[in-house]
Image (tube, rainbow, N blue to C red):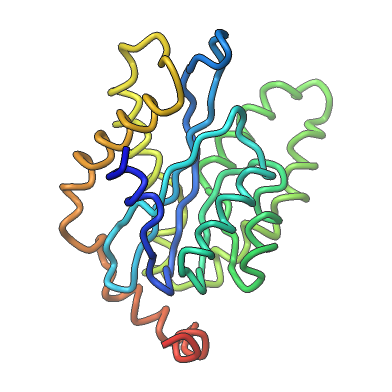
Length: 227
């Protein structure tokens, strides 16, 4: 566990232009009972366009309150600024991010919103689809900034697939396990799986140079202030 703890507490870069945040769920024993646990993950895209797992955290349930703890720890480990945070539509999630990074633009996953709209549309067809209307009014301010960015940036923020694909690889590892004896065993196995998965991350994400040129112009003052 010493290696895992050192990895989890390591200093991070001062700026990540993009951070993806998501969670997956596992079953773990707690006080003799099997419970669902949320495993929180954060992936940062650094200034060179390289993906990096910033950390992994475990809690009983996924919620905005615990995400606030995660974001606070990321700041305490040296991250001074995040330009864009890509998340799903969890209630209170954007506010948790903005409480720590008030200048960060929170971008809801476009793909998630389309899926949720289609699901809501089906469920509320006979009720004049009020769920869709309420969802769109609530989330619109988190969606429209997407259209303010040039295509080079939109390509890398329109979806949280970058982290969801990692989650899928982790789920394959835990698929054959009914439950874990404790949280430490969850952490150890997933850490090893993360280490194996990230060995392939040896190139910048696609079209990063063009995207970074736009970031350098759009966020010039913030970059200069930190560097």
